[in-house]
Image (cartoon, rainbow, N blue to C red; front, side, top):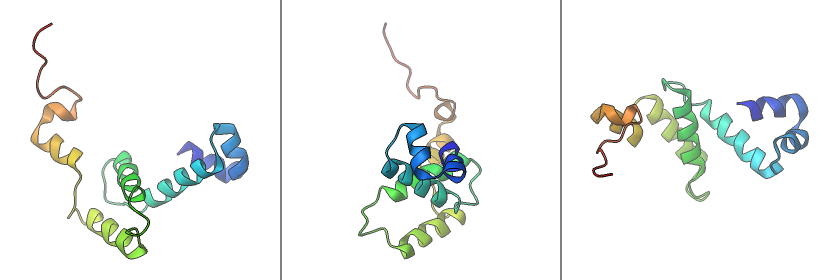
Length: 106
């Protein structure tokens, strides 16, 4: 992730200024990227980012370290999948970005 590398090179304040975002927004991106690195068994790196975003979107009351560890463990063990993987397996047209149901009419 470019933002993560920029933070490494320049620091948070400078990186946020260059990217045109607030430091808090940059910190969220960094948290998501660091969490995504823990998803090691996924084929697509974008899937790890998706899982990390979903986890970070949970209520902070529910997001305890034990819950995060449990979800990561289950995803890495392929005991939990997301709907995108399921849809692509069930309907190959969706995995290519095509519409599952063609639009009728003009």
